[in-house]
Image (cartoon, rainbow, N blue to C red):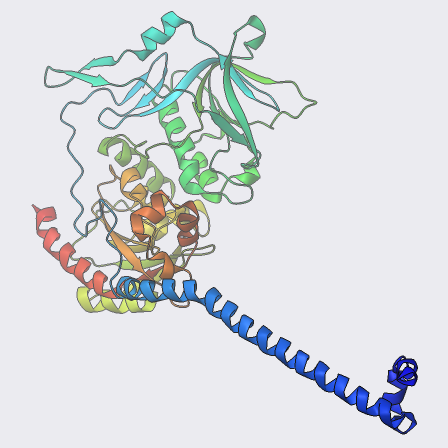
Length: 487
């Protein structure tokens, strides 16, 4: 019908006013509308079936993975991961050093501390530090051949003690609060690189981040330099430190003052592009991390302890067992605070029948920090840089170090190896309200610390929750070991 064709163009008007549509046209329009509705319904039904199919396909793989992973996940969460290698509630005693060499040795390749577990700090000629790189004089092939040989020292049992040569220069050094890393490269040595004459001690800011003083890593630079200056006191050497006094912790400044080292330390500003290069004619470099055996033996640690306690007017007393004084020393700020120290206090009081003091380590002046550890027979501490004060703790004191969950290191045992302490590790449990540590249990202690860097740094920043049941076992172990100490 031609009229319908014309009026179909005005379908919207007819829908608004159906009385205007002719009868024949209305019938035709209703048929077309029903057909369109049926096509739409078929299309919608097809789309719904396709959507259900796609949804099932998309959920099939995740559901299958979840189905096969739930049983092992439940097993792991109900059974804690294996202990870190080398961990023991009863750590073995420090191995004896039968063949003793010299405690200190200044060689062409570096400064050596200790004989059994030597710490070596490299010595170079023509060290120059600019705004873009660190250079030092490249030695000749003949000098390299001499330096590569082992050094032989006569020992007390008439045998020779072979010691490896000192470490090479680090690949990089850090300045400006670890915000600037410069490559270290050998170069040709000329007269223009003489710089500051004589033998100098040079330290950078490696492991000392901006506005975050770290007594533990400051000690890696200050104590070896202090021992060098003490052993070679007839020579007037200077420690040139690329830092500022306000960037050093109260602990570091106090240690320097206790040994009157202020006159032997010169703080140097890092050379910018406008300033000339800073050069040293002969330098011992304190930059790279150590194995933390920088206090070589009991005699040296006793000397350090006595000097510090006398400086702080603290009585020099050996620890007693059973302990008469015990303390739980938490961290004053930052991460790794003890979450359940009141439960720990209750266990200590019940097992040892003594009152337990609560305190904070790493807080206050240098002598305040030393006093916190030097007046106790038993100490419970979380892992952290504040524990460097334990170098001055009472001889024979018991130290229980609690670690964050999935983080474990022997650093404390290393740098207190000559302090004559009884150091026991205690692995932490999963703290409350910790979402990520539960799934991270899958990787285990060793994998998290050694191969999964994000896991290592994440677990290190968490609060420390002591495992109460393991603490009870540890205290029984300490009681058994005490009979050996008395002998």
